[in-house]
Image (cartoon, rainbow, N blue to C red; front, side, top):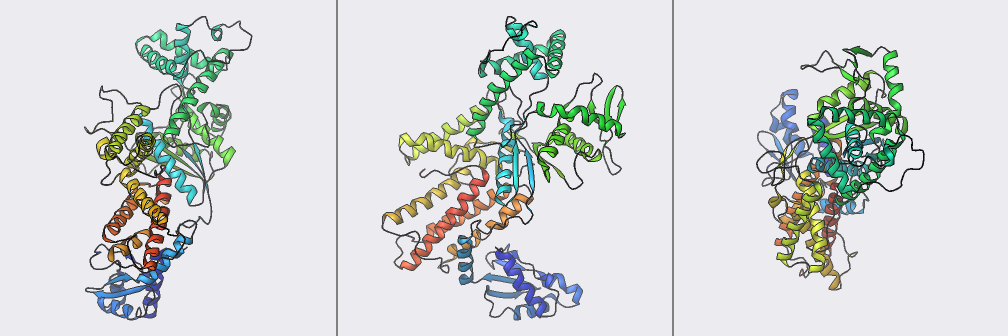
Length: 588
């Protein structure tokens, strides 16, 4: 389905061509002076130099060819040569009828669907999710949903950190605490216990304790490094412990991600990439890309155009151990083998940009990816507290994600109870739904690459540019539609008619922007564009609601038209929030 602006541009282009000018000048933009017009064409200004003619003369010629237009109710020239435009109410109503009938609400399905892997989440096992994991999960989930909506095959991978020193630290600390466990008995040949020797709570205490000890005790750290090495060599007892750590951790991670309405298609781990490392490294050596530098194995990735130093990409340390770089490269090898993706997108903290520059350049230089495989890095900014510093607990520690969600839910529960809009037994569940919108919208409404302030008071407000305000708008529409049905109305009756007032027309015009917004949000990997759009739609609807007697309208055809418009508005808003990763309750 063509966008309204495309249809208008076609009409303008034809008018330019008929007047003897290049049709390329017929571009149409949303007016930045809504008090004067709805859309504007500045092509006459651009064509003045080429045709050695005053812009208003060109504009006059073009507007003369727009008389009797089915799209425009107004096309007038404003000196020095702007063409101001208003859309015909009848044409706009027909466009919205077509949009309502379109399964994708005017979003065009990709002509050449791509396979895209999104690497987001990235938690380390055996550690609780904290607020630092929030942005990757929320942004990645939204981009995945938007990509699927426009027709691509999008695969989400959590990419767990499970193979580094933290494993050796946990195993070492367990050995110190419970040396009698069979996992540490080298002579043991039996079957290892099915039940883990620790709970998730104990595991989450063991790691920080071991980490702290390793920073103070060199012998302890050396023991942990040796345990890591033995695990990676496949020592049976350590592998059995590793499996326990994975099972306990992943079960907890899935529960926490479910609370965020975030899902992954793949629960791949760093360890899954390990089998690909030996061959990958050997090939890089054979092809002359990898060489030794101070005992380490590296690949040069600097380019002549670099304005700052880009260090070599290190594959192996001097002791032969692999690094994050090695694992990320091997993961690319695995992904190309299993999925042959057109693009791999990493949604990661922007402070890791240099790491990914090195990885991408190394992968491309050494032929790990095809020439047309796109490697993308979306580096997000920091989530800060009101003091402008990274978000912390009141005590100054890193806040667990679980606790942040609980705090938001409690705040929403108190506000909902105060409003007395939902029965007590339903208020708790409603608070969770609205609380999730506060968290996700609060994050996604900011441009991903920028830092932002996480303000619980503002994010949970029912007024202003917030998730609860968007949901309140949807719930208001649901309430009107329910009342209409209770009064005997048929939701399928009637059709959208020409707008009866300016606020209705403004809402109708806002709705036409859905397709452009979604497609643009995917192309630019920018969920904040959808947030900005639904905020404008919500404002437009609420203005229309306050200025129009919807259910008390005496003209039945007009009332049915209002109801059809409300249903389309609800569908656009609900589809949009689903793309952002949250939903709306029935009452608030």
